[in-house]
Image 1 (cartoon, rainbow, N blue to C red):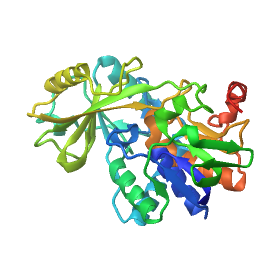
Image 2 (spheres, rainbow, N blue to C red):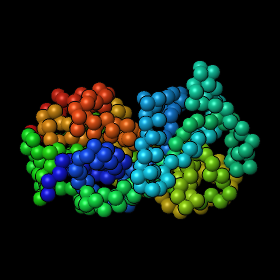
Image 3 (cartoon, rainbow, N blue to C red):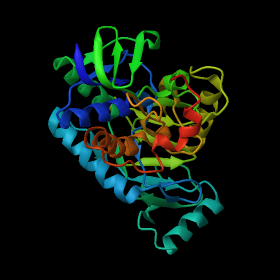
Image 4 (cartoon, helix red, strand yellow):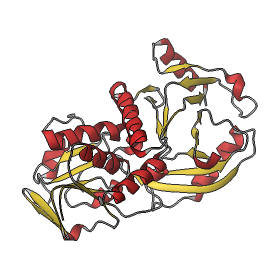
Length: 353
């Protein structure tokens, strides 16, 4: 079997890269072992234009937000499904300092922030320091996207459902072989597995563990994403996603009792409604020290590439940079310097040739 590109992994990165390469008229084989829990599958799906305690604009959001919305709309049409909700964040200020920071950013002219009528929420939630709103915010149904795209790949004979085995990959200057497959290039979009990839393991990854509870909260409106330290996000089957954590030191990728206890304490303080925890999810995110993705071809092996390191911003970053990377691969267009893996040329030159 001969294809133009092998894509390893079918999370948010592998999904968007394979989609863009197929749109460019290239042949693609995606290699991905189906697993119930991955960082893409348990992510909330929120695209938020502001971030951090200072509530500053997310990097490149003016370009990335409209591009991402358009990409998801195209996939809605192609997959005949609904993926996007306009679901603004209602920010319940947890301290006076957070309220003052929000008000300061509005005064500075931040157009993504605005005031919000808090009276609508008093029957449902306890809060002290007032409420603001982040507008616009998108909520993406990642599980529908990943499952529908996987089905389409299967229908087009573009998916190999198995665990990738580095030991049977053979890399040559102008192509690679894997089992019975020959491709001009192989691109690793396999999340945390790239930490152990012989070609990219020295990149400055900063893996962190995220956890979330899936909670039934009868009577709570599903019109907005609610945030007060933790976030309450509309999820599937009239349930809510509640989280998330950022654990930089962890022993495994399993749900932890400590997270559940702490999160339920927050819910009991915040909610005026009864709730029931129905599931507890956990996975390790492929974040990076610089908080910028790794995109591009290995400086010493032109037939091996990586598209990874989106961290918590995969929903917004993956559509934009997958398009850019596909254009780079097919048409030779330049990559954004801040994401181009060539910035680590010296480090990567130490890896196996």
